[in-house]
Image 1 (cartoon, rainbow, N blue to C red):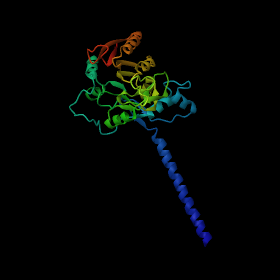
Image 2: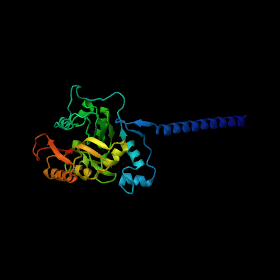
Image 3: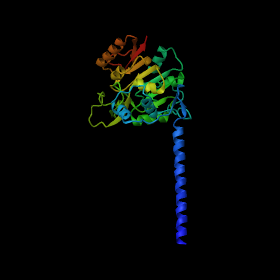
Length: 305
C-alpha cells in the first residue's frame, strides 16, 4: 500500500515537472518570436528589434573599440537599437502650457526655422538633449513643423525625464564617441554641465561623481535607425563637440544645419571654424544669442551650401 502511494506520488511529480518544462518552452519560443516582429520607427524607417551581441570579439569592439568591425556592422546596429526607446501611445506629456511654442534658451529654434524656410517633415538630432523640453532647440520643429528625430542623452536622470515627456522621437541613452569607434567612457554627472570626463573642462571638481557611459559614433547611430540625412543637428556635449565632428564619415551622412555649443571660448570657436573651413561646403550663419560677440555667444551655427 505504501509502495503504491509512493509510485503515484512520483507519477504526479513527473507530470507536474513535464508541464512546467513545456510551459517554459512555450514562453521561451514566444519571447524569441516577439523579438523579430518588425517595428516602424517614427520617421517611417522599419527595422527589427535587436538581437544580442553574439561573440566576445563583438563585445570587445562595442565596449573598448577593439577589433576590426565597422559602423555598419549588423550586430552593432542591433545593439544600438536595443538602447533606444520610442514614443508610447498617448502623445506628448509636456509640463509647459499648450500655448508655448519656442522652448530654446536663446532663440535657436526660430533662427534655424528661418534658415530652413519653415521646412516641414524634417529629421533632427539633439545630442545633449537635457530633459527634452526646457532649453530644447528641437521641440519646436516636432510640434510646429511635423518633424521627428533622435534625442541623445547619457545622463540617466535626464534620460528618464525625456522618456516621461513622451516626445515623437527616438531616444538613445548614450553619448557620441570622440573616437572612430564605440567604447565605454567616464562621464561626469554635473547637472546640465555633465559630459565625457576626458573633454569636460567645466566640471574640474574631483568630488563630481562619475559613471561609465556607452558611446557610439554618429555614423553608427544613424545607420542603426536607417537615416543618412539630418536637417538640423544640435551638438551640446560639454567639450566633446570638435572631437565628435572629426569622427563623421561625410560620404555616408549629410547634415544641413549644425548648432554647436562653445560657451564663449574664442579659442574653441576658432577651432570649430577651422574645421568647417577645411570641409569647404559649410558657411557660418550666426551665433546665439543672435548678434552676440564671439566672447559672449554660447553657440555657433553652420549651414551647408
